[in-house]
Length: 558
Image 1 (spheres, one colour):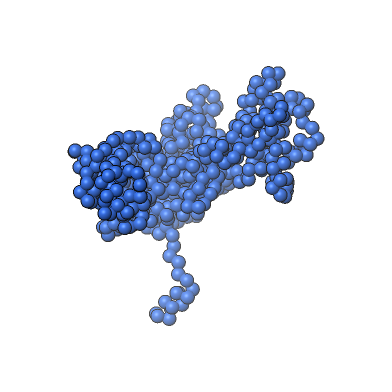
Image 2 (cartoon, rainbow, N blue to C red):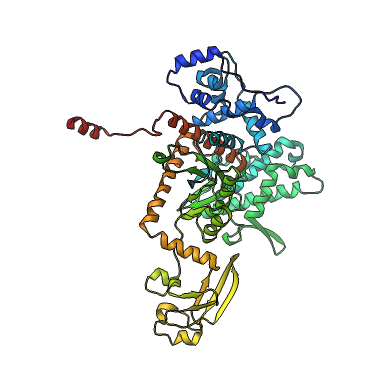
């Protein structure tokens, strides 16, 4: 299939007449075409298609169809039907009323081409570039970021179900790819145990029976793996995704030992399991991970949305999403700050102030954002967690006077430190400061300062630039002025709610991190069109709700 880039056709006259009659006030698809014209040019997607072969459907039009699909949370089949039967979509795409459209599988192929050629961000970038040329989005100003969980498109399994379903998936793949090779290995018991999905069975009752069932599954799995890795087995069997996934799961979940000449298989203890970021949680989505946030656990991913948040009444501009990032569920928010800033810098949309919650702030990011991008990272820093600071009655770091030039610290009693040593603590540059043990033991306020019976007080400091930035930030975040500036962050919760309610962003449509991220980018682009449509028509994004009782009171008052 090839693409011969061409300009979108003008909207056919008959389509215009019928659309204006059917929608005299306009709707989103019609208004997008009228206001933005040819939003996604074919040339922008040409690298994903060949130059020879039968011409395919316009990729620019497919991009718009996909975005419109997400504005209404439609499936591929429903979106293809809308292209064939809806007047407003035909208007937006510039199609004749008699245009037959295309098969829904074309949308699947289009998304895959975007992933294969690194064009997953192109749709959002093109929209933001167009809006930038219209002055609707610009660098500087204020932006805010928040994240929410995304459930993977797989069933959540307990540990026994997980290993059994992993083995069953591998057997299914081998039965389809190499039935002749698998037949001698399979017996009647295997068919009985793994012939149907694990959610079709009732798990054994009792801990002992479940351990026995797990041991049986583990032994069966090792038998299959040994056969697949035997020298007589075809090498390509090991490259089947389901078989490779099973091998990884067995390495992560079990260990084998030799005792009295017998081989024994056992679960790995919690301390022997690999870190959560490496541990597979589903045989059908190798990118999904188990994450925890505020006591809530889920298997899947996390999406980070960044939007403009300048005062609309002052600027007259809508709040628009400028960046989307998707990670697995184990990645912390603070790890995304630099990625967000780099992405915004690449689009020429760096804010002057970036408003985030505690999860995104750290001493390093506070300094790096200002140094590398000129951005003020506005968010509450975590409080000092030392014992002295927690009790409120001890002598915390703020009680000590630091002489950075002479590398000396003086305590509240006037005693100077004797040791100033640089070190690396958990990968971070730090400074260790120690006071003489003799002076600390004789100190009248020793109980408020340290509990050490052998050494004197010890302080752990960050480099001067970071230390001073943290102290200044902690001082400022207790002021009313700072709290008033930070209040704008609450609005991002509404964006998360809109993304969930309109596009279903909290549940992935597809398996794999790359496809989930692509879907989230299309969802963010769709939300921008919805917000633009509301801004063009001066309509609120959400209707005001008045209860029946309040309405009755208003009637009586009138």
